[in-house]
Amino acid sequence: MTVHLEPWGEGDLPLLRRTLGDPEMTKYLGGPESEEKLADRQQRFERLTETGDGRMFKIVDDETGAPAGSVGYWKREWGGEEIYETGWLVLPEFQGRGVATEATRQVISTARADGGPGRMHAFPGVENAASNAICRRLGFNLAGEIEFEYPPGSTMRCNDWWLDIL
Ligand SMILES: CC(C)(COP(=O)(O)OP(=O)(O)OC[C@H]1O[C@@H](n2cnc3c(N)ncnc32)[C@H](O)[C@@H]1OP(=O)(O)O)[C@@H](O)C(=O)NCCC(=O)NCCS
Image 1 (cartoon, helix red, strand yellow):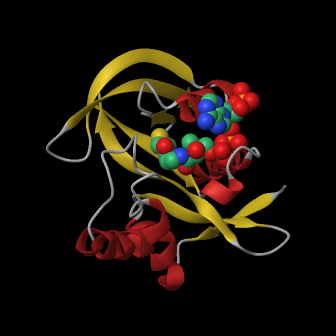
Image 2 (spheres, helix red, strand yellow):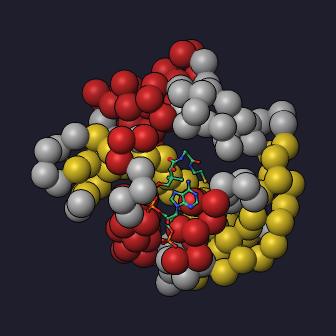
Image 3 (spheres, rainbow, N blue to C red):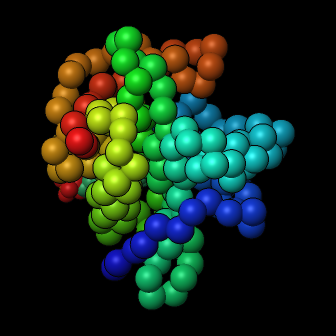
């Protein structure tokens, strides 16, 4: 199947509920967010592009127009430098068909066109086999395992993958 990316929009809160609000989808991400947090996140996703801090996208099935998941990147400080962090979620009915890999490939191109920061990191949980496979397949370099603070206030064991995009 083929997919394209559309900027996160006003009507995308239901997709957020099915991704970051869902217990199974967030089993490697510290568990589902509350309705209040999701509403707050929806606002931030809608505004991310205009703040210049990154971009969030809805992954859309080319054939049906159905939402398949989310992917994006946002600036953060890492090791004393400004980098992009990236992350992705694909709905269960679309998993296992290369959607996350293709969507992440597209998002890397978009970040490259934005002109900086020049390095992108991803921090999948060490047990998240599919996400670690995506990083490997797309040419990210494995820096090693780290204790990563997510969600805020708790830590999880993650791999630190990086890719120079510029
Ligand atoms: C992780 C996730 C995005 C993968 O989406 P997807 O569209 O199914 O991924 P793809 O089909 O592009 O597959 C990517 C790779 O993972 C592998 N893979 C897929 N599901 C897997 C699984 N359950 N176990 C092990 N490997 C798996 C695929 O074989 C592929 O590897 P390959 O390129 O070496 O063949 C999706 O499962 C998801 O949203 N999970 C919940 C949220 C999450 O964990 N997000 C990531 C946070 S970093």
